[in-house]
Image (cartoon, rainbow, N blue to C red; front, side, top):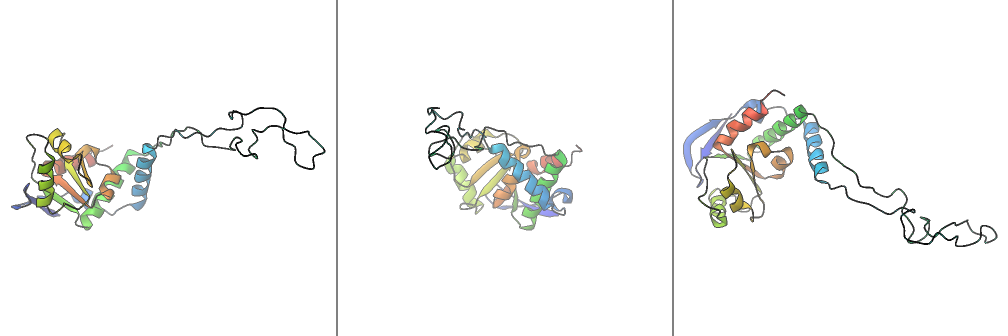
Length: 211
C-alpha cells in the first residue's frame, strides 16, 4: 500500500511511502468507532447543569389553602412541582459524563477510521517542513498549493511545531495536531488528512505498540 510523497508546495517529489496495512488497511470495526467517538463527546461535556428542586426554590412554605373542603387536591406549599414556578421533579444534577474505554478498543477505532479515509483517498503525505515564524498568509498559501483552500483539513505533525500551529489557528476548517493527539473524531471529522512524512512512521509505531 503506497502513497505519493508531495513537497510543501504540492509538487511530486518522485518518491512514495509504504503504508502499514495493519493500520491503514484493516477490516473496519464500526462499533469501536462509535464507542470512541461517543467517549470523545462525553469527555467534552462540562456536566455543570443544575435545576432547582422543591427544597431549593425560594418561596414561602406556608400552607396555601385548607386541607379539605375546597373541592380540589391538597396543596401543602407553593414550592410544589404542580404549581408554576415550583421546583422541578427529577431535574438535572451536576455529574461527570466520562466513561472508561479499553486502550485496545480506542486503538482499533483509530485504525478503522484511518482505513476508511484511505479507502476514500482522503489521505495525503507531504515532506516535513516548518515556518520561520507564525504567518497565517503562508499557511493559506500552503493550503492553496495543495488544492485544499475550501476543504476541512487535518494536518498531522511529527512533533510540536508552534509556528505551523499558530499560523493555522485563525483559519476556518483547519486543524493541526501532533501524531499522538490524533483521535477517531478528528480523523472522521476531516475531509482531507495531511500527514507530514515522519509523522506516519511515528503513528505506525504508536498504534502497533502492544498494550
